[in-house]
Image (cartoon, rainbow, N blue to C red; front, top):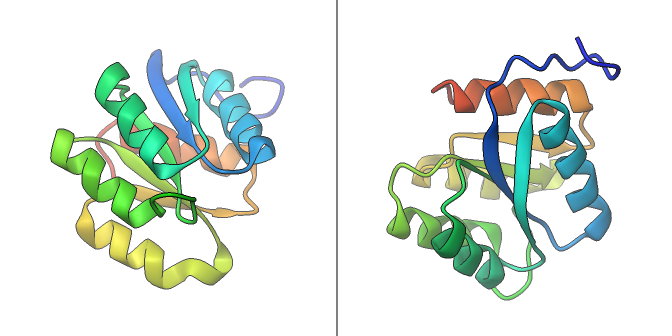
Length: 134
């Protein structure tokens, strides 16, 4: 296990982190790099996330539910139109359960609720990368 308690068993992967909060993006990026991932881009709004997904084709997307320009659910829809097998984990505050449920029904693989521990987020990421879901 690494210094934070997160193990590094996940093979290297690419990740797009999409959140309108710079602090949240940095926090998620640290979790990704701790478990062996490479954050290839960060997006601060939904449209930017879709554009970066099309361009970079990351292995995983960590996507905030509440985003400007396009909310997380609409962003998810557009990402899945590009690649129906995209692995997207929704990130949300506790009060957005309905939007999380909608995202899961549309095709998100899992979700992480803020605030979260890095260990828990890493476990969810590894699970999704290994084919797991909700």
